[in-house]
Amino acid sequence: MANALITVDELTAESQRVLHQTCNFIGTIDRQYEDRFAKEGGKIGSTLRIRKPNEYVVRTGKVLDVQHQAETYDTLTVATQKGVDMVFDSSELTLSIDRFSERYIQPAIKRLAANIEADALSMYKSVYNQVTPVTPTNALDFATVGQANRKLVEGLAPMGDWVLNLNPRQNQDFISDVKSLFHDSEGIKKQYREGKMGRTAAFDVYQNTNMGRHTQGAGNTAYTTSTQTGTIPASSATAIDEITVASGSGIVKKGDVFTIGNVFRVHPETKVSTGELQQFTVTADTASGAGDWAITPSIITGGAKQNVTIPTTSATAAITLGTASKNSDLGLAYHPTAFTFVSADLVMPDGVDFKARQVVDNISMRVVRQYDINNDQMPMRIDILYGYLATRPELATRLGSRVDA
Image 1 (spheres, rainbow, N blue to C red):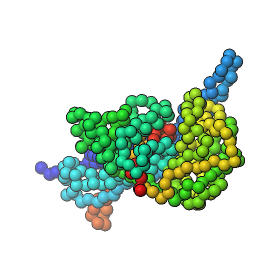
Image 2: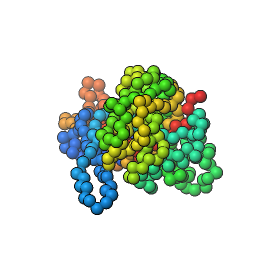
Image 3: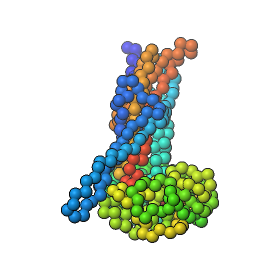
Image 4: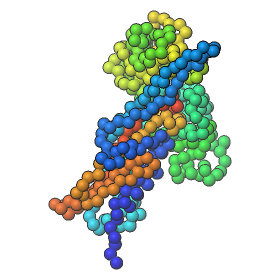
């Protein structure tokens, strides 16, 4: 009996299975599937609006103080289409799906997954909370993970689904530091097979080879700011997304974390000062040290969305950055809703040999094959259309360690 050709549904399902097993960052964050593209197909540049939580000012006393609903949204752009392309002859398509997957699908999809993961992990640059060991050049330890736990608690991250995703060296350091705290169990054994170390300090712990390092910009420590759209506001409900830096030299890079003197973080609900400086991150590379810096979070000193307090305004305030031009290992601690990954259906073309689309865990994948009469071959393409956004970065914290000496 002749061997049957592998079907398009088998190819698509197996490709989705491999992708699902490989992406442990995307697999642990909020994934949304944009089904409005199910018929006509999506395209690069399509957008999705994600509603942000409402916030209110608490009244003191019996006099009614009505607040209008002010719905706010983040706009997520489906900006990237990636895929892998292969070509086969009929004999190769008569292999069993297991052998075909081992020889062709797994190497291709793992490479695709690594690229998608790397794209999504770039969202770390929008995370402004950061913790490091007491001595930043030291290895990641349990105490630093405890600091990350505290950051999430203070950001009111819902308990129960926290994830700690580390680069391989951080994972090795962390295992070494906490090995005496673990016992031999089936859950711990999975760390060697699936990249999941177990659960500790309220986190499910993973390692990810795409979680790399952050390179600090060349900026020095002489930066000062004299204005945030004029002056540092004493009390303003207006969001300030840009600061004007009066002095300092050296390019600052997107993702660099800094603090501003006398700008303190407040409790998200009571708005009482925590006594700790608010951390910020630069959202775009600067052309030079002085000038305007785009930042996140916004500086808001009053109203329902207040996030900082500035007890005393002054002519200048010192900006403190990390060590110029240094590399540091990078990890992320987060609640899944800190980040959003959106996948949309691609258009299904007509006039092809075969085509199929499958959605698994809200990730849409399309497989299309056509016959090449000129070369007697069957080229095939596997595509994913996606976008991503740090929708609630306050529910995430970076972990930096082993900063270059």
